[in-house]
Image (cartoon, rainbow, N blue to C red; front, side, top):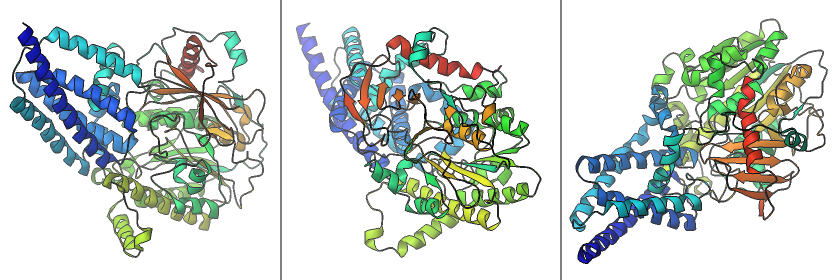
Length: 619
């Protein structure tokens, strides 16, 4: 018996080292593919845990089970590479169902990067072959190995606040997510009416603030709300320098366009969540987005289960013509049903561009999208009455299709650049992101120029923002909070800009402040109803406002006090760290402190509960 145990130990150790070396190779490939360099201590710990768990699986699996394991491993590596490239994190296992959507498959999965899938599958089967060749068969001892795997998984989970940051290991991260994904796709009881917000907590906090100026406007302006897919404020050189960030993309041309057209660009803009439907809900309805795993608020409105009385409907009631025009298929995320119920009269997506979505993945590239929108605006402006139009491009969404003409233009520009001006060191996928952002900036500049020449900006409030903040703007992706919450906001008042009525550029702005500002600027601030947010036409009041945010890709949740305190919590809000910041320089001044959390566990759950249930108000 002792000999069998010794043989088991020797074989397992050999398997562990094989798995660890193999994972080191995989780690290098993921870094090359995505351009995301994780922190070294986290990487070492994650890969040791991943190698141990992988060794257990290899030791216990045989036959069909082994074949399924190896195939699943190759697919997981492919998805991990794609997710790291597009979002800077590993995938959340609970979102696996999203990948089954046909629009998502054709838009994000069926592209040139699909070539990596066979490569990762071959590497997974190479691991199988090497294990069979170098490690002799021994006693399996399933109880001992499974118990050890459970222990390692538990220690791994406790060691990482998030299971999906770049330092996490694909194997260990996936295994650690299995219990939560099986027990409850929500991952917590938030939203199940298990906690209530006490009157005392409501009085001493300010998380559901509403404020307008009751600005009077005898000539309500047109409103053009431009959402740029995945744009982060960190891509603007002045903002990245202001916060001392190191962006992977620097958009000098976009910043110059904002300056030339008289936009005010805000430095401390909070993108409240990840994923388009969450950000869109906050921007359209003036409510907290979904801060838990499932994104159900837009779906609830689409299916007539909630009526949150959104901004487009309020403006439509005041005589505005309302339109929502996006480049992606409008049926995705049920926007074809949500947008009309939110109050948009004219709603179109990729289908308005003929068969462009079939040849360009998600939809038409920006050089096609923006000129088309300009033509529609010109036609709309010829009609009587003010209008409110919201647009969303798709060229800056992975896989970053820019179209053949734009590709040729960029190649010509690069040919005329000196070697010092060329971008070097970026992996192909991040170069694709940079190109897409540059093409978007050029397209937006031409778009605004055309509108100005046609006089469409004379009585139009123009707001440029993003549905979510994507990309990588920090050197350290692992330890600093709000890594993926640095949003963007640029505002231009009608005519030759006079922005004296608007808040200064250093004010902290959240996504749901934008619809409140639009309502206020059109002279309808008194119609805010149950909307949340603080208009940029109003003065800050005491006490300072509190805000909730989240990053669904890392599972982190944040409770922010604008006076200068941030609570960064794990997905279940069971573990939190305290941070202090300068309110004028939020993203560039975060410092961890040893202070006690200013909210208890029950209070955190109660606040998130109320934020989750806000869509039901107004029914």
